[in-house]
Every structure is written in C-alpha cells, then in structure tokens.
Length: 92
Image (tube, rainbow, N blue to C red; front, side):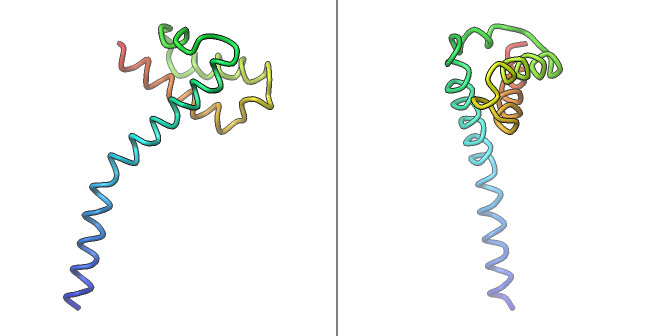
C-alpha cells in the first residue's frame, strides 16, 4: 500500500511540474501556427501592433479564414485568435 501511495505522489508531483512546460509548448505552437498561416498574405508582425479585444480578433481571423477556408480551419482559427488575444493583453 505504501508503494502505491508513493507512486501516486510521485506521479502527481511530475504532473504539477510538467503543467507550466505544457502551457509554454502550446503557446509556442500557437505562435508558430500564427506565423505560418498569417504570413502567407502579410507580415506576421503587422497584427501584433493592433490593439483588439477577443471579439475584434475573432472577427479579423474569421475574415481571413473566409478568404481561404482551406488554409485556416476552425481549430486553427481558434488557436490563432487565442494567441492574438494573449499578445494584445501582454502589450497593454
């Protein structure tokens, strides 16, 4: 029984230590997705200077998605929007 408790404790500790790294990877992945998809039509730095709230970014990304639906799917649009919202919040 002590071995099971020790194992569960160890696994919980590893999970807690891994959470920040997993979040960083997701953010880095979203940034790369943004750079890859958005730089097809314009410089990727351009949107980073715009100040918009979530609704504004959702509208902008949806507009870009409609221009070429096969280039940005719904999941990617959501990730790009979340990335742009987080970047806008950091620069305020």
